[in-house]
Length: 363
View (tube, rainbow, N blue to C red):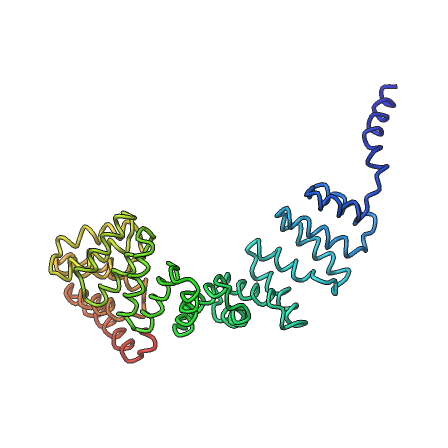
């Protein structure tokens, strides 16, 4: 008896479900009410009843995407595609679901398929460009973002990503044009002034770059790296007093800024104050192990102090960071020479000659 009663209770619990017909119209009504979890369950029921219904799988994917359940949405979209590859909008939805997971490589395939069928699809074009940007394939990103941004001249976000792609690809003229378009629409854009300054610096137009960084610093005086960037440009122009003020301003915002710390040390060294430089340089290497100038300067100071083993360690790290720059090899060769190791010294000097004879390598 108890067993029969238990079965009856279970049957009673499930009777309402068994009695309710799960239909697309019911799922759509639930979606319209914002009941996405319930709508998803109904769509699952529809797909169980008719596992060949591509539209139902596509609708399930859409509801799951709205819930930000992108991995499950991708599965549903792929089932829909397997059943009907020509289902409208399915490739775009699949690409978006992959894109929103940061799976940029997976997103590229559906976006390319859309453009193969319709090259004028600007949404797919922009998303394809953004996918390449996410993969740091900036040259490919530029091709697609250029088309998309030309079609939408007022879309500042697109121009910004295109400009950054140009900057990272070292296509400085392209970056310059994009940042200027952004500033025409938004003259108070902090990031546009700052990045335009970087582009101008890449073109060796340092005074103009300084002007842009000054504008950025005026708009966002507490923004990270703006004072360091301006200080670096002053340092590059040998305006060390102005550079010092900016590096100190950066450290007032971020006391653990390794580059600002290192360049303050370099200024002290250039002013013939190695004892004052040393604490800055050591601190910079403690904050980060990839600030090359700190290791170069430490190598110089240690060599002057005849601490040759320490100099070798510092200069070797500088070489590791940029092996195609000749200055660290030259200084390392001189340290080996001072240590009496002529064989290692000649090896380093040979590397210097090879790099100097091949300007492309030493860039």
